Length: 329
Image (tube, rainbow, N blue to C red; front, side, top):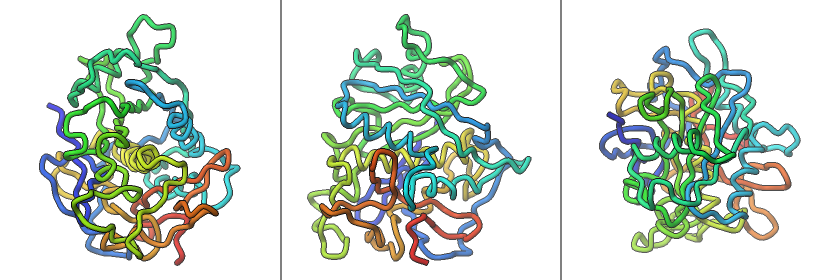
């Protein structure tokens, strides 16, 4: 039975993007070095193939500008041309994690296919298990643009549009990752799901570009919302959730590799440890020291085509702290 991948409540009601605990749990943010974090390797695989082929499944009706923002982030992961601090610089922390052979997580993630499920093949409400059926449809439908079944080095990313309701979305999750069941998809492959929150729950899933209305002013310095670097709180928040899930599925694809805690059904993964941390000094709801462009939009990473992104940090196993390339120390 698939375990739920609940997002952990950040301080002041922020939902994050965790792995699979069955109940919600409050976590502390470890912006500084800490010996309290017991992150361990449990001998499972990581995504260490020379190239990971990422396949996007666009479920529902999508705004082309939003799609381009997300795809440019994916393209940025393996692009060496972006100025520092860049998306690949951020991914280098993820790459520090290895499998039992000493092989690092790959640096090469290619967008290798897209499937547009604009007919809502499984309806406008998706359960967790139905998301695996969505992946199956993208592989076995009669469309000329079906995706390959790639258990060797494939990674599937299901993205649901704002008019699609997903089990626990907004209430408890903004995204999750797991692996498919052979009886549904035909093989075991890692996948992640992330929903567009702009029309359903920006206050819960598009932090720090939106804030729950009933929670008062945001605890950023000055109490003002951060402006989204690509002009839409929902999609810019979604990029950070996608980054969170990609980091965790890469380091824990079968839920038996890198995580903290003794219960594999309720792991704390490498991005869970850094919820709400985007820059130096983060804590207490303050996202940390980040850059702002000429229009006051917040960002901490540069991408392709002049794109800028604001993406949360992940746990650095060498420094034993949350870390990103925009760190000031």
